[in-house]
Image (cartoon, rainbow, N blue to C red; front, top):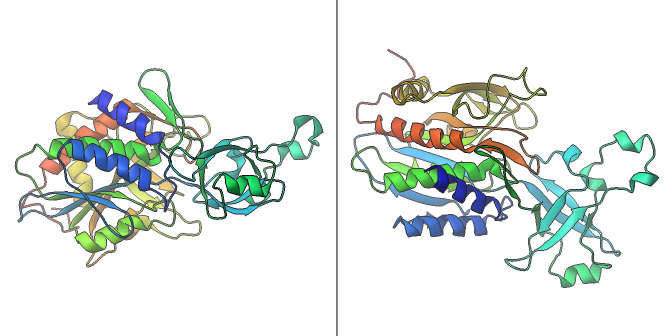
Length: 365
């Protein structure tokens, strides 16, 4: 399992898929499902959905993760060929100077570029400690004119992402441009392989969602169509085992998967999730029974598309589960493959324990 997770994650991180432009990632995931004989469909927004039918008397489950990534959209091409962009998603401006990027004009036709950084020898003391806003950034593709840029296929509206990279670090740790949330996609693929061979269990509708980084849109559309009783969302959880994060919690890389007990964004989008208590108990009991260490997270500043999925219909019993990750939204995020394997095993164990008698009341006995 670990090697499949490694292979899937490395492969998926090298595929660009800006929010709203996920088609290459979707095709790659669909191809992997096809190999396993798993049929899937795509809705009008672009979500990839596959269903594993089970006990009709048990609650229907929506298990999902997002396949898009954050980045930029071209907004202007200067006459000298420099390219101006707008942010799409929570791109950290302080991490952008001198970053390599990929302008996505088509498979095998994409154009590499670099976000310009003023010559150090000409930088004033004040400028050395100033972070440029996105509106001030310029992308240099090497073309000398707007005409040359457009001849390469780049125009207003062209998607731009961090230049895709995938690096192996010490042990089972991995760095990459879009661990958020291609790691979740790798976990769902591994779960799908197991569910395709299972007998019994609840109905599980698996969704690889789109536009999560663009105001959490895709999963809501899927939930409106599927009308699940339970929603389980897989995403990153902020690792707090570095000196700059140690006061934010107790989530460590390599120490197992986690569950979120509280999330709230509080900046722009006022939303979050307080998980269903019976689902919290389900995952705690599953972790204890499978001898899997389970970490706990409570964070402000974090938001997932579960925030809106939980509000569909008469309400959906919901929980966020995930894996510790460092450097969120940076060009190289970091996770541990052991956490992804344990998260896969934990999710499968919990799904097996959802039967016809699973109580969806928020009142614990």
